[in-house]
Image (cartoon, rainbow, N blue to C red; front, side, top):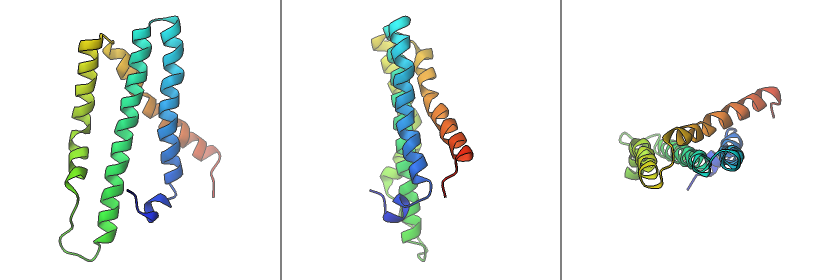
Length: 138
């Protein structure tokens, strides 16, 4: 759960748009690939984009939790950070790698297609960054 100060952050809107655009780009890339080339490649691109979205979401939740804990405990000598925050930070890449392996191994989805789907997060970030530069909102 995020605190009101985090939800009111000037970057909250951009983070939300990046999250939504990651999935949208994954679907927009996966559909034509599935129709024109191979359904396995299309599935791989979509799965990669979904994993990128999950990674971004976990990163965002972890950073929000750290920010909230730091702000709430600013005057204390010993700061308490929830264990789940450390878990998500440390194991999110491992869990993504495990998911890619299982999907590759048991569904025979090409690894390269999933890696290309993971690039949806980078593409969404670049698009939102360029939009923020071209059309800054005050």
